[in-house]
Amino acid sequence: MQALNIPSECTPLLNLSGKPQFGDYQANGAMGAAKHLKTNPRELAQKILEQVDLTEIAEKTEIAGPGFINITLKNDYLADCLKNCLDKPSIAAKNIVIDYSGPNLAKEMHVGHLRSTIIGDALARVLEYQGQNVIRQNHMGDWGTQFGMLIAELELQLSKGDQAELALSDLEVFYQQSKKHFDADPEFADTARAYVVKLQSGDANCLKLWKQFIDVSVAHNSEIYQQLNVGLTAEHIKPESAYNQDLEWIVKDLESKKLAIESDGAKVVFLEELADKNGDPSPMIVQKSGGGFLYATTDLAALKYRAETLNVDRALYFIDARQSLHMKQVFTTSKKANYVADTVSLEHHAFGTMMGSNGKPFKTRTGGTVKLADLLLEAVERAEKLVREKNTDLSEQEIKDIAQKVGIGAVKYADLSKTRTNDYIFEWDSMLSFEGNTAPYLQYAYTRIYSIFRKAGIDLEGFSADITIVEPQEKQLALKLLQFNEVINQVAVDCYPHTLCTYLYELSSLFMSFYEHCPILKSGIAPETAQSRLQLCAYSASILQKGLDLLGIEVMEKM
Ligand code: ARG
Image 1 (cartoon, protein in one colour):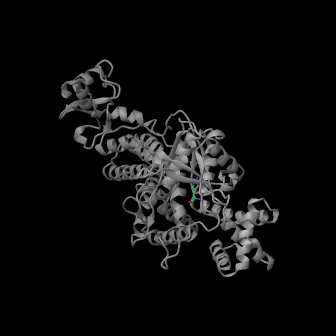
Image 2 (cartoon, rainbow, N blue to C red):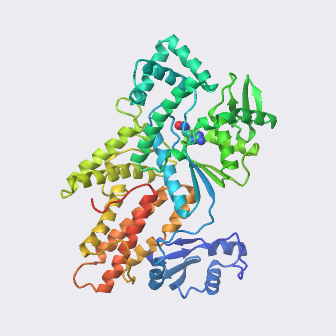
Image 3 (cartoon, helix red, strand yellow):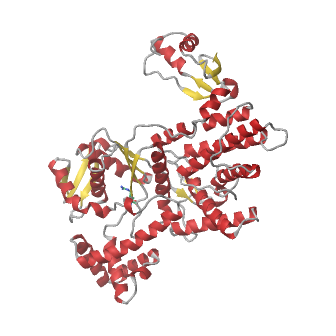
């Protein structure tokens, strides 16, 4: 580019070409560069081609239309590249905090927590695979006024001789009971309110009850994480209460920096940079008039900790789109207060809502919130029914194991494969279908490959053979396999996991058409050809398995 005086802001715009007749890759940057240089784009494209030496890798290059450069790669070159297709990307590692799941512990986890939990987990896996230093942070809601009511109820039930585990075996029922008491019994309500204050001032009895409650609730969440194949454990929990001792300091500091001011008895940060259309600054309350601190105060303390102690380069938040303003306020304030250096990238990766088939937020038939545990149970039950119908020679244990992977995989994939920022409709039938862009389709594609090796009597693990690319289907598959790391790097930047889903779906489709057109185990196929094709199969299996694993979805050898 330098030799031709092309300014550095012009990029080659190198992309896969949409159609085989335009070669394998297209470089479309010549037109833009020609505009800058005020020259003829086709002539510039010609000069660019004269400057770069593609003889080693390209079989053909040509200039098309106004100045597209079409490149057809050599089959040998592709086969050679494939040897490294399973290598990890090489990057300079950064410290990346991922804030995800963060359920409120007062109640049982419900479907509203699904998206943050599985999207955040997919990103944690992707970034870890890239070699980043990933720090998972589960910002659980374990503090606030509701806990006064809940521990008053727990004390009541324990005084009747109940065991804590038993009393709390259904957190939803427990919450309803305590709410009923709170609304109907003024004495109970007074105790509850007094307990909020006592809890905050560190009263030993209240803290003990609170801890009992929290332990049971956390244990419930851990079960859900396991069921979901999500990698969140106790070490990742850094709940709201962990920042309690920092909140007073935060408010004082914001006041001393003239960022927080008193307004109607409360302490408020007014943000000009987030002013509404009338020009009124956006208010963020950091302390209520009664003295209580808020969700925002805790988030400021958490971000300060992440920047100063965890030393992050990037902080990613996977939270519902409805909290967009809250996140903007927290990010803006933390930079103004110098809790976070300007170089740190603060990113709220918002997502839409999971809808029922009626187009309204997903609810039970009677309009209640759907418990996540129930939803996952139903997924596995439905999957089990399907597996029984499809395959009759599996053992009981195999059926259970496959149903678990298919059911959970289907729920996760249906979510991850949609553009994150949109709402989506939750539909059992389409997510469990063995056709189309679904987890069962991809898992099935994987088992197909496995069965080819089984039939050939060859071990898939550790298989290695030379590849010779001849047929167009082989070439298409090879090109796709080589894009895996590109896709991973893309997802790592913009945090849209559906890009990876689309890639895996296209890979499976290309594999299926390769398999149809390029026989392997048929008689008359030369042994070298069969070996080469088996190697393409093995790479496809590895990448499918790896890609699904990065989405937190498991594969199996048969189904
Ligand atoms: N507990 C919050 C909720 O359920 C989510 C926490 C998200 N993380 C954060 N740092 N605010 O809405």
